[in-house]
Length: 482
Ligand SMILES: Cc1ncc(COP(=O)(O)O)c(C=O)c1O
Image (cartoon, rainbow, N blue to C red; front, side, top):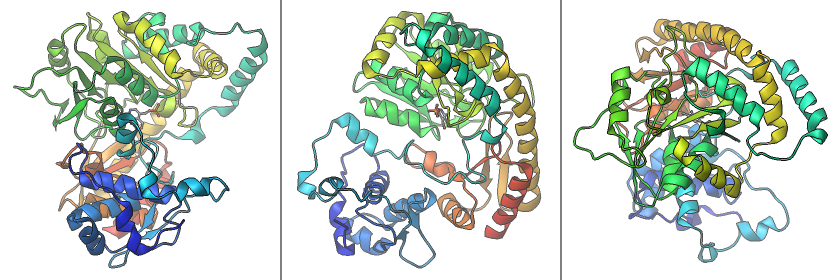
């Protein structure tokens, strides 16, 4: 049953004891109400003042939730007006009605794991449209789809003759082990590599396998929310570690945690590169068999200014590092697929967990990928788009400096697919994102990637997925918004 305005406050249930902030809880609950169709398209929400008073929270909390949901495309907000629901979330099908309309008292009991995941807004709920300059993507238009199609076809034709299992196809493991050793300096046997549907799946699997509730986990702050979500859902106590110019800082006085999650090649979101000294310091903090590092090398394939810095995993002589990679950026988000290099002592534990959780990637696609890599198409594609993305990064940087230099300070990353432009005045990055999204330029607020109270404010802008003329058009729009 759709919900009337007066009832909206009554449907929100904020827990002050939860680790999750009130603003994040409110954002998640409003998002669910829209996604389930209970708040239908066109429905005006109460004003921030009214909702804040109904819920007994500060107006800032409500404003944060409205701005975040506007940035994600759930709400349409315009200055001085109540926000309006922008999408039709609920499917009108028989049977779904009874679920959508069940009273609050009949909410199903769910596990702490599911409940923690519901309270985070990442990754599936980030549904901003794929328009310039949405971060996090490579250019699917540049992907050699014809060649990929031929690999898929050959894999399909061979499928009937293929032996069933193993779940991690040996040809792909071999091809990846060779690629990772030669291109990323990863030291691993093929049998240490698990093939997974995504990098996010790798994080979930690691969390399930090594986290005991209450364990301490460090993540970068600001950082990749998918990692914090996976570890928190497993019951870990997640601490955000501040950044300096080399990414995650060494924090004297903090006892070593069970796990440290980091993106040393290009810190997500800032793009900063972790120095060799810092990498060795973090490795020295770990205790073999007790403390783990998760190195997420999500876009390590893209380096422009210097030779690529080898993976941290290659420095580790004691098997303390999980190395996570994804084809989401290097190929397309549509193919996705991820992989995980597992420390030798944990291979069988992780393989068993992988099968039981069912995080098994299609053999069909695994075989096609093995051929795509072994025949040199993957490296050829990377070489080509690396040149392209390099030029696009430079185009975006030059344009930002020329047209928006008064308001934004660009931090030029040495690689990757996105960059950070900091607000020179004020901290209102969420409001800026809302304005930009309304004008047709998609970006993400750096403060929305903070673990706790945001310390950093700015815009995360993607450059890889957009042609130079598209970047120029987006820059003109941006200039008219500031
Ligand atoms: C830092 C980081 N790690 C991991 C991922 C997830 O990759 P996948 O799409 O394979 O789950 C992303 C995706 O945006 C990312 O930015």
